[in-house]
Length: 261
Image 1: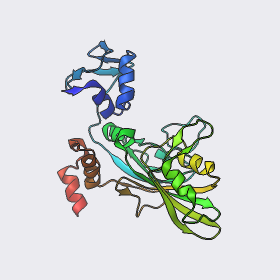
Image 2: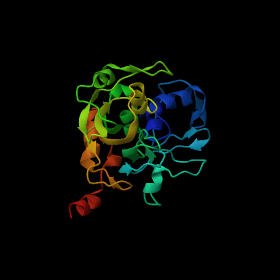
Image 3: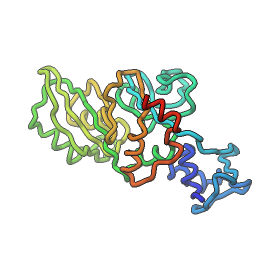
Image 4: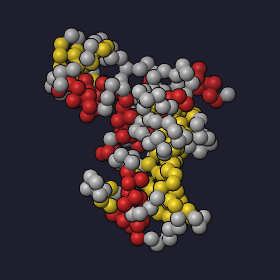
């Protein structure tokens, strides 16, 4: 038995929080009966779950891709304006997967695509404080002791929203004289947070790359390319959250033998 909102999250319908909203709004039915209260447990093997009339089934096989996103792609599954989307970088017959979080059109670097709703929720929910490492190129020279680094770590106020934006860490990396590379780690992110934080300090961002999520890096994957996450990497992510890796994420014995060869 499984709680309804967890099942919807695992099936990729929405995060648990949004799934609860769908339930409270009367958009979810179980065996033909509308459900509006939390806490209902269902049997995914025998119960018929529908969201707005669409039958929901969990994926039979969980997929995980690490993509090195170049600039010029947007992290969505559909764009009315016809722009390039992140799934264009995967083979055409790839089953439906979605981006975990997002990178802006003009940002680049590591992004995970999956059909695992539960892992998506854990990697994106602020309470889990998953670290994300960014390399940021700033126009001009910034000294190692610049007070801006301390300001980023303590929090800067967005002049428009008045929200406080904080980096877990922020430090000097290297300088070419004309430009400076800095590294920033976030554990939660607001829309275009790094760019807005830097703009508040008067720093002009020329390039922004995400180079790691938790212990996952994009080493060996060139821009515009991808690789499958290894089984041990998926297991490590689940282990970080104190959760058991689902059976659907494990390779079959035949696939494991091919991988070893």
